Length: 83
Image 1 (cartoon, rainbow, N blue to C red):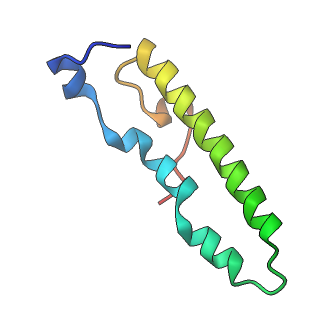
Image 2 (cartoon, helix red, strand yellow; image 1 turned 90 degrees about the vertical axis):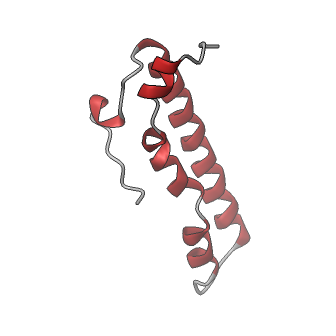
């Protein structure tokens, strides 16, 4: 694990992790549950897929953070569509 130094804290930003919030937000799940023909299996599938993407994003950000402390998603052409 990386040592937390004053420089590390200065470069750290929670905004890098903002897209992850939308992946697990309840809004899409509530919307899905209100649709005609709602099936719990669809809810589970969406949740599973979102968790998989969440883990991938977290793993990527941790790997990159170790090698490029001032990285941002836009550095790699990633966009945050989860507002």
